[in-house]
Image 1 (tube, rainbow, N blue to C red):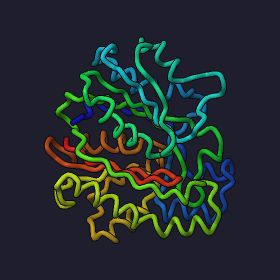
Image 2 (cartoon, rainbow, N blue to C red; image 1 turned 30 degrees about the vertical axis):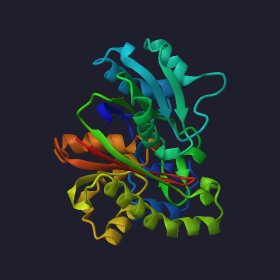
Image 3 (cartoon, helix red, strand yellow; image 1 turned 90 degrees about the horizontal axis):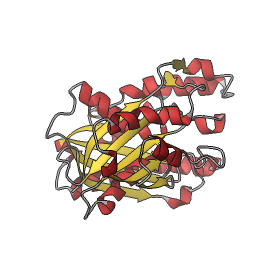
Image 4 (cartoon, rainbow, N blue to C red; image 1 turned 135 degrees about the horizontal axis):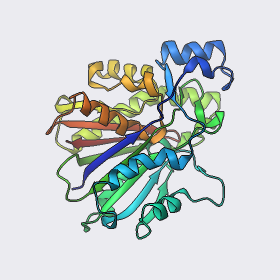
Length: 306
């Protein structure tokens, strides 16, 4: 069994009100009301002067401050936008050279879009099965175009990053199960037509609920034993709908960062973890879920024990 030794997160300090993005993102009056009044988005963090390396470096530096870099055998960069830097820049190779990680085996995971970090976490179970070395998962990307910043009538993306250090020997944040449901008919993602989008919207909640129950049942637990759900911050309305459908207390889903940060690609569950722990909402021995849905469409649920 693997566990998460350390999670470090970062987001830019400057806040941008959603109302300030109306012209830049070409949002209609209806869309502004939808995003703010219904979806619960208020602000995002975004710094156009900050490079991708600057966005990623703080969690990496903080993790390397407490671990021997030579113990890191794998580096996985989980991101949603397939091309994060212009050719021929390879951001992971740049980071490896800068922080003395040239020995590590590195690759990106993007195929599951915003749920790719949970795919990376699942993959660690196999990479570290017979290995006492560690794996470093990195998330974070820039919203460099309006196309990358808006999912039509669904969410607005912000910028954040995280570093997740994983090992077989960690007794904290042990990974108990990962359940994944892929609905390949929606592979077009942001390019889905109106008919596909409506069909996906109808399937969304039921598919996510089914995936949650399967993930929890694999561990022998019940949903009542789960202390907190750490979601991707796509919007508030979809999570409220899920809670109502499941007859689940809304307080069991950590929703505070939706209004403050927006949807930060693959980083959301890890930022939510850090904030929930700082608020004392997850304590030693508690079971919790990390949940992300990537357009395309991949629903993923991870069950962990702190």
